[in-house]
Image 1 (cartoon, chains in turn green, yellow):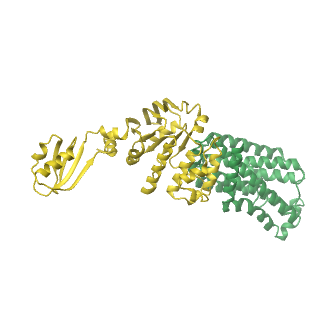
Image 2 (image 1 turned 90 degrees about the horizontal axis):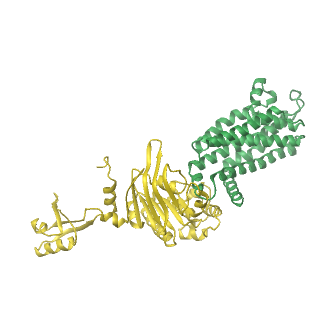
Image 3 (image 1 turned 90 degrees about the vertical axis):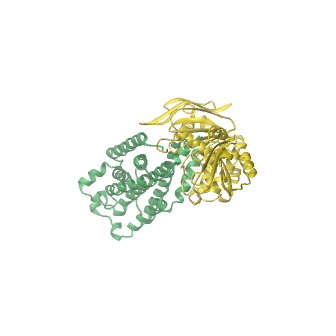
Length: 246
Length: 303
């Protein structure tokens, strides 16, 4: 346990020394939410949105953005680079198993996600008076499942990418369509029905909707929780089967 | 007492036989060289010893342990420096040492280790800022930080400049003097000749010889060679009559090449002196491990 804590702390230090990753995953999301709220129309309740404001909808979208950044872009790139540089192999000659480094990366990613999400929710609540999730338990369940699904997809990327560069490329290619379906460019509420339906079956689309529902007081829909759980389990099993340590 | 016993080891990758019936033992406290051309199966052999690869046949015992079954115990007692293994760019030297020493129950004093390896001045440098030689030394330090009984060092001076290479050699002798058994994989003759107590020569997956460097050289029938340029014309017979001389050859530049055995130099110099012939540019060549290696590993494509 002491060894694992030390590994995780080391991974955290390395992340904090990586200005690009730190900026896009932790600093940028609360700034993004803050900037969106500057637009006056986004602060007006809209009947098309069931009385909600655009800024309200962007809170769960930005939360999912944080997860996507860390889980699909940052962590897989780190892990694939560690494999490419023989760091996992070096570790396998010591009493520590290389699996520990993978878990340490996940712990670091999860920890940074919590920090960034707290900042995002903080900016929303303090600056724009967005709602504190009413269905708190439902929100936590949705967040944990969304994080599990995202990191599982990230592990699958790390498993199949032959190099750090390749992982970063695959992550970027997946990031934009997934975030599109999660409503980053226009929220799910104003999407055509077909697009929204497709989004329901993606980890980030289902994640946004589950968080959104819990925020307004409803329990997340079983469909979305099931989609998240399916990605979490399916992608982790595939990653476990495909992961190469050298 | 042997600390490593390898018997009839076999390993194949798809249609390539990487290790073919290799057997040897390594004694406690020695520096054991594994020498061979690139792709000969050296790295595969030591990776099986380290438990990183599964053999297809034969048995391996390291400190009495089976690397496959007793991997956890083995990794506590064997330190490995792998070929081409890096660290995260932004990890600092002291952080790497502290982290890796935390993996072991009774680690070495890593600060001392950094001093011994001449890295104390780079304590706060990140891995990415180290020179090639410094990275290599840090790699050795990490292999030693667990106080191993055996250190396996794979191609440790590849890519180093001559000075760094010599410094590293001294270091390896220092490690052996602490009682650590060293298994050294190399394709540098000079390195094996200088460091190894015994050398296993592996070629195309097969063990072709195992002996001390001097023993390997003495197996060569090449004997000694003397080259010189006589200042006055020389009748070959005064040389060929000597019992020590085996052959006399001349090349276009007026240079004479004498091969033979025993006290060859003494005999040639005195017969020249008796005949008032001065030998200019006199040079004596002895076969070295390089020659022995070439003789042992000559392939068709090299001939």
